[in-house]
Length: 162
Image 1: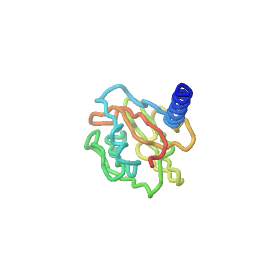
Image 2: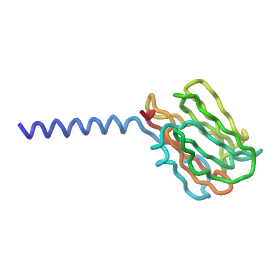
Image 3: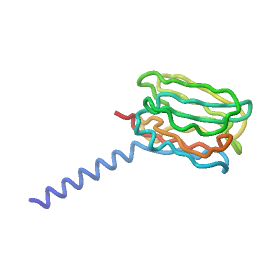
Image 4: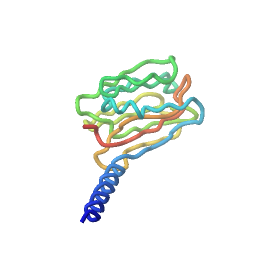
C-alpha cells in the first residue's frame, strides 16, 4: 500500500513539473556578441512586468530598465539618447516583442494583450519576432548583453504571476 501511495505521489509531482515546464520558453539572443551579460531572472520574483524604460537615439537602443511589480531593475546600457517610459495598465502584459538588430539592438516593438503597439528605435537591420511558445504565457523577464549600447536581448516567457 505504501509503495502505491509513493508511486502516486511521484507521478503527481512529475505531472506538475511537466505542466510548469510547458508554460515557460525563451527567445533569443537577438543582436551582436559584445557587452557584459545581464539577466533579470531574480527581478521577476518581485511581480509581473509593470513598466519598461527605454533609452534610444537615432540609430540604437542604448539602455533598458524594467519594473517588476513596484521595483525597478538595475539600468543597463548607456546614457545617450531619449528616455521613454512605458507603464502597463493593471493586468496588462507583453505578449510579443519584435525588433531589428545588427551588431547592436536597433529597434524594439512591444505588443500587449490589450492591443497596444509600442515601437522604439530605427527600422534598420535584421528582423526578429518573439512570442511565447505556449498559450497564455507573457513576458516574465529579459536578459542580454550591454555596454554603452544594448548589444543583444533575450526574452523569457512564462505564466502570469499570481
